[in-house]
Length: 325
Image: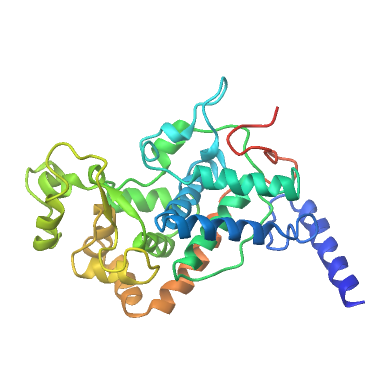
């Protein structure tokens, strides 16, 4: 009787969701593919165990997808006769990764539940699982997104916040996606794990703001340490951990680093140096990890709700790298 009641409730939720074309909810696959979340989690666990850096890569992939055309898996599409891939944009070229992991998850889901689970939902779940696996918070992931029929190279180049953007430029990019200053500071905390390339912060070491001197908001000893593997020319792809204290642990160390003038990217450090409001959030999160975790989870759900394709819009791709037939 109880099982029957639960099934009826899920059916009712599904009917309501169809009536409301933009509604996402965590139970979306409970009937059509009840093992979906487990399959995603198992593959993410395997990938992160093989390479700890993959957790940050999968989290970043979701972010870079949502900020272009909404959370629609457009970032996963390869070049084709009609599509210019977002993988070639400045923010993604030689940087975005984790595509093979998404491919493996999709293949497993197609075997279990053909043409049911979208690539966009896979990325949303993988981002959550990556956060949890590295010690961060968990949250219920609203599901029901569908996959785009195209990509936007120009959108990828223009909409994704860049490491050299001013605070106001980044905040504007967030606001255009329905996100606010609280989301900006909290989501930046994802830089508690992962790596950045020398080319992403070189100007801070040698030519900050085009003035031929280093960024004085960068700790001097940290500056010297970074210069050893990030020369004035060459070494563009050399990798540096974003959090030198706990590089593979999702914690509030990122904010502590900003206070100590050891934020790697300019777009990170400006949270503590260029706005009283963002500075206060940095201090709060540095002092209270649980507060950061709570807000990060809320902001991830909010980001995951950026203009999803639902109902009859888009499609459920059979392969994440190309549109169906």
